[in-house]
Length: 402
Image (cartoon, rainbow, N blue to C red; front, top):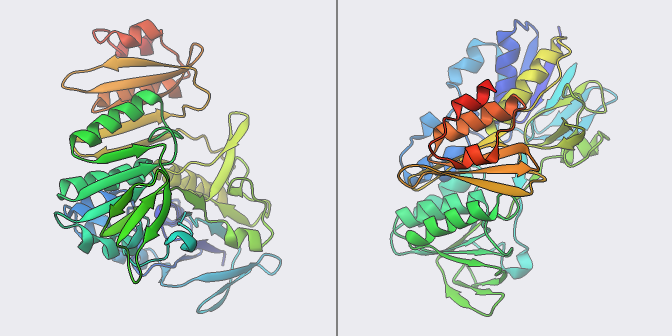
């Protein structure tokens, strides 16, 4: 009987095993996760769950009974320590296991601060797992002072929750502006204004010198000499693909676990999907850190394990919720040279990224119609006239007909 072993019980791993069964795969399936909780959604962790607006069970991607009902051997709290690719065996904390197909959906790990600057002190938190959020949740009480290190989406989402809970919030970003790596100055300015209007102090072009405290966090010294009295620190300085197992097995890496267009690695019996995997995209190679990619790529791998020979075609889109603003992003803005602004009603706005006359991406803030139209245009390979985009009275649906 064919045995598919999936290492990593997150969004990609859960999607992969479910897709295999829905396609009629009747072999053995084992899904292994290091966490003790069944596969769950990560995005709500730093938003609805941390705010107390979502119960634990609602985080779960599927009821625990789903795995038993579908004869999926779900092993929680178990760690894979090594892969013997030649023998098609893995070593786990509960013993060895053989496979016919091995799928690495090992996700990503958050970057941490060096212990030399206080990064290991109690009271320093990252936002990645359920355990991370459960550990920091008791700190979120009105009047407490928090420093958030990193002005990406994770840091901004944490800042929004803290501000809504009545905390005293300071956010530092080493780059010249928040979201510099992922968004245009227009989007950065929108969210800077949003956060400052809610009382968050944003310090750009400012680094963290060190965190102070003996037995736990009591403060911080910033690169400009500013000193802060603090109760805790949240670190949101990016993530790294989970490649350790693949590297140890001799699987080829390139900004993650390198796969072909079908999701297969340099070892024909090993596949990869989700945050950990890099794949061919428009003549280059990318790695996407998003829920839609984790689902779509994992399902494509499941189809190809079944012999479909299907090329994975990514359709990048992302989202972020901060206060009463929903940001939706379609496409990838890599290589843009201008941004066109489309104003909406009630403070809604969208920013459209172009390279020359080619539409690359759209950032839509409380503008779901702009997001949907932009996404459809990008996926159809259509690039509208910038003057039409900038005209709020223009009907975007007409652009799809051209």
